[in-house]
Length: 294
Image (tube, rainbow, N blue to C red):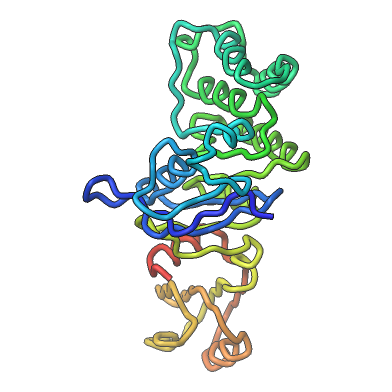
């Protein structure tokens, strides 16, 4: 079952591009990564999903229901954390969270205390007295206090220190174990790599790749590094499957997708002093797709 289904979603702001023909689905119980730099269309997609803005064309469903027609109903089961959070400065944290909890027909007090303790959040402080990072913690608690079935996160870790980021990831993993589906939007590749099952890469408003993290890292590409004293000239240029070729003073590095036997034969035709074949990290793969637009 798909919790989210997005079909040819398009949004223009006047003549300015938002997103164009965006299509993907998020399966029940998975953690789905949505990656791309600022301005690529991540937030526009999420805001359209949440019916905060309306699409120019296309449509999307959440829990099998149209995300606009049934917006009030589906939002009861969604926890949302925007990239930036804004609150009434004079409210205390506990008052804000209690007000948020009042929208749900359940007692959220224990959950609020549990999350606040885990995130080291002082519930007695005024919003205006909080740092940016602590305001983000308030947003995390607010998004999770009703134990939603779907958690949508837009650049959620900005402002959190590394230790608190790890605590946040542990909370998300625990929610996922309990059955929550997560859409995790970020431009930080290491976050997506360590947390997500699948990933969609968005460039200039269009989806350019949807892939399993494992497949993206292991099955498609190898990072090959060669040290040689030979004059290599154009030895590895114009070879199908080679991308991101870098040659500098006897050092050769490239991403390779294809028959390893073929490339090993090509490498063996030169005098090598060292050879390294390794899995590329997600950032290398992402930048390759983003530059090439594959």
